[in-house]
Amino acid sequence: MATHVANWRSRLGLYAKLARLDRPIGNFLLLWPMLWALWLAAEGWPRWGVLVVFVLGVLIMRAAGCVINDYADRDFDRHVKRTQHRPLTTGAVSEREALVLFALLCLAAFALVLLMNTLTIVLSLGGVALAASYPFMKRHTHLPQVHLGAAFGWAAPMAFAAQTGTIPVMAWLVFAAAVVWATIYDTEYAMVDRDDDLRIGIKSTAVLFADYDRLMIGLLQGLLTLLLLVIGWRAGLGAVYYVALLLASGLFVRQQWLIRDRSREGCFQAFLNNNIYGGIVFVGMVAHYAMRG
Image 1 (cartoon, rainbow, N blue to C red):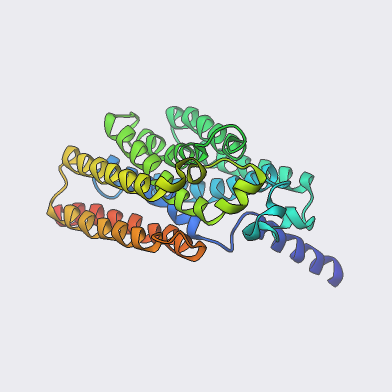
Image 2: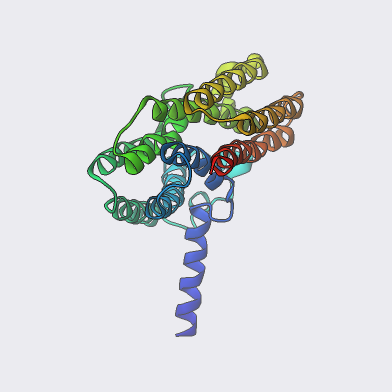
């Protein structure tokens, strides 16, 4: 009995590693745009039921996305320094186990969304399609980072649909901001693996941009700042939001410094820095509505 329990604990640990529960940075990068959207949709604190469902849903779907990503990349990951020891790559978890885990996570997320209105339920189907198709994009296009942004940002129109029953222009502005932001940080992330990707034929924006990577990231950072300014203007956000946005924009300067020599460690640190960026923008929104009362 004790051996059986120990084996199950070992399996669960491997499943948790496959779902990246040991690397929560991805959770935050998914949560921030969703929280931006919820606070803007509610013009302050959203309904508790909606907030709980969306937080849990984002966490579950991020785990599902990691599982299907590793399944899709199982033949490539053994050739990349950063991914050589993932459970699917080493054979510690079977392909069948990964697919079953992915299905169970998707079903759990769908069970949660069934608590929302019909519009949100319909939109959730698009979210699953984006999450499931993303890992295969790097075989066919140099823009998988944009596809990832669409998958991560899809929570924005869903959040507005759940909170207000509509999908206004503001929802699509937040979605666009999420797409641009994901393209920024996932390009920085892809720069870590660029040498390996070029060797094995994986496509990415880091490969596409080549020597213009820093310039393109800078242009995208400018575009994201502009989108967030427009969002603040349309939402009637006050000075505290713009101060937060100014502080957050300073982090983009730091990211440019971190990637200046394109070292693996510097690019990875620039990627991680985006978590703070998203949090500062969110705090600016929350502070505005809290001060407004």
